[in-house]
Image 1: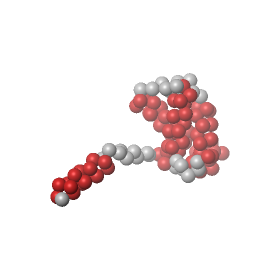
Image 2: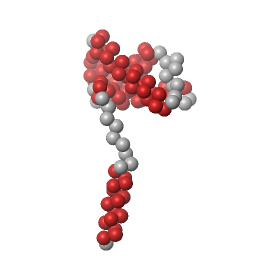
Image 3: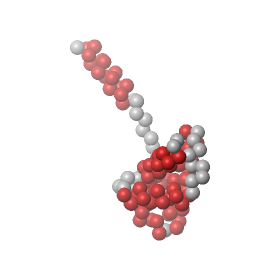
Image 4: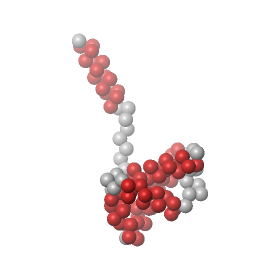
Length: 109
Protein backbone atom coordinates (compact mmCIF):
# COMPACT_ATOMS: atom_id res chain seq x y z
CA UNK A 1 0.00 0.00 0.00
CA UNK A 2 2.86 2.35 0.81
CA UNK A 3 4.40 1.75 -2.62
CA UNK A 4 1.07 2.57 -4.24
CA UNK A 5 0.92 5.99 -2.55
CA UNK A 6 4.52 6.74 -3.51
CA UNK A 7 3.74 5.93 -7.14
CA UNK A 8 0.60 8.09 -7.05
CA UNK A 9 2.44 11.02 -5.48
CA UNK A 10 5.29 10.77 -7.96
CA UNK A 11 2.82 10.59 -10.83
CA UNK A 12 1.00 13.69 -9.62
CA UNK A 13 4.30 15.53 -9.19
CA UNK A 14 5.42 14.54 -12.68
CA UNK A 15 2.11 15.50 -14.32
CA UNK A 16 1.90 18.90 -12.63
CA UNK A 17 5.46 19.76 -13.65
CA UNK A 18 4.85 18.96 -17.32
CA UNK A 19 2.90 22.16 -17.87
CA UNK A 20 4.64 25.52 -17.81
CA UNK A 21 2.83 28.57 -16.57
CA UNK A 22 3.36 31.46 -18.96
CA UNK A 23 3.07 34.90 -17.44
CA UNK A 24 2.20 37.69 -19.84
CA UNK A 25 3.15 41.25 -18.92
CA UNK A 26 1.81 44.49 -20.32
CA UNK A 27 -1.35 45.15 -22.34
CA UNK A 28 -1.54 41.48 -23.36
CA UNK A 29 -3.29 40.90 -20.04
CA UNK A 30 -6.09 43.30 -20.92
CA UNK A 31 -9.39 41.96 -22.19
CA UNK A 32 -10.46 42.09 -25.78
CA UNK A 33 -13.39 44.15 -24.53
CA UNK A 34 -10.90 46.80 -23.43
CA UNK A 35 -9.15 46.58 -26.81
CA UNK A 36 -12.46 47.16 -28.62
CA UNK A 37 -13.55 49.97 -26.28
CA UNK A 38 -10.25 51.83 -26.70
CA UNK A 39 -10.02 51.66 -30.51
CA UNK A 40 -11.05 55.30 -30.88
CA UNK A 41 -8.29 56.45 -28.51
CA UNK A 42 -5.23 56.82 -30.75
CA UNK A 43 -2.74 56.62 -27.88
CA UNK A 44 -4.23 53.46 -26.40
CA UNK A 45 -4.52 51.85 -29.83
CA UNK A 46 -0.88 52.61 -30.62
CA UNK A 47 0.23 51.35 -27.21
CA UNK A 48 -1.68 48.07 -27.63
CA UNK A 49 -0.47 47.58 -31.21
CA UNK A 50 3.13 48.17 -30.17
CA UNK A 51 2.75 45.41 -27.61
CA UNK A 52 1.09 43.08 -30.15
CA UNK A 53 3.79 43.65 -32.76
CA UNK A 54 6.56 43.08 -30.21
CA UNK A 55 4.84 39.96 -28.92
CA UNK A 56 4.35 38.53 -32.41
CA UNK A 57 7.90 39.41 -33.46
CA UNK A 58 9.31 37.82 -30.31
CA UNK A 59 7.25 34.70 -30.91
CA UNK A 60 8.45 34.46 -34.51
CA UNK A 61 12.04 35.04 -33.40
CA UNK A 62 11.82 32.35 -30.72
CA UNK A 63 10.50 29.88 -33.29
CA UNK A 64 12.98 31.06 -35.94
CA UNK A 65 10.11 31.67 -38.36
CA UNK A 66 9.67 34.40 -40.95
CA UNK A 67 5.89 34.12 -40.85
CA UNK A 68 5.42 37.88 -40.39
CA UNK A 69 7.42 38.79 -43.50
CA UNK A 70 5.23 40.74 -45.89
CA UNK A 71 2.33 41.01 -43.45
CA UNK A 72 0.91 44.50 -43.21
CA UNK A 73 0.44 46.03 -39.74
CA UNK A 74 -3.12 47.01 -40.69
CA UNK A 75 -3.88 43.38 -41.54
CA UNK A 76 -2.65 42.28 -38.11
CA UNK A 77 -4.72 44.98 -36.42
CA UNK A 78 -7.76 43.95 -38.46
CA UNK A 79 -7.40 40.33 -37.33
CA UNK A 80 -7.04 41.40 -33.69
CA UNK A 81 -10.13 43.63 -34.05
CA UNK A 82 -12.13 40.76 -35.51
CA UNK A 83 -11.00 38.28 -32.84
CA UNK A 84 -11.67 40.74 -30.03
CA UNK A 85 -15.14 41.63 -31.33
CA UNK A 86 -16.02 37.92 -31.31
CA UNK A 87 -14.27 37.10 -27.99
CA UNK A 88 -14.55 40.12 -25.65
CA UNK A 89 -13.72 38.19 -22.46
CA UNK A 90 -10.47 36.73 -23.84
CA UNK A 91 -7.32 38.77 -23.57
CA UNK A 92 -5.15 40.57 -26.10
CA UNK A 93 -2.47 37.89 -25.82
CA UNK A 94 -5.04 35.27 -26.90
CA UNK A 95 -5.99 37.45 -29.87
CA UNK A 96 -2.32 37.82 -30.77
CA UNK A 97 -1.60 34.09 -30.67
CA UNK A 98 -4.72 33.30 -32.71
CA UNK A 99 -3.66 35.91 -35.27
CA UNK A 100 -0.18 34.38 -35.44
CA UNK A 101 -1.63 30.90 -35.97
CA UNK A 102 -3.95 32.21 -38.69
CA UNK A 103 -1.01 33.82 -40.52
CA UNK A 104 1.01 30.59 -40.19
CA UNK A 105 -1.82 28.56 -41.73
CA UNK A 106 -2.34 31.05 -44.53
CA UNK A 107 1.37 30.92 -45.39
CA UNK A 108 1.50 27.14 -45.02
CA UNK A 109 4.10 27.17 -42.26
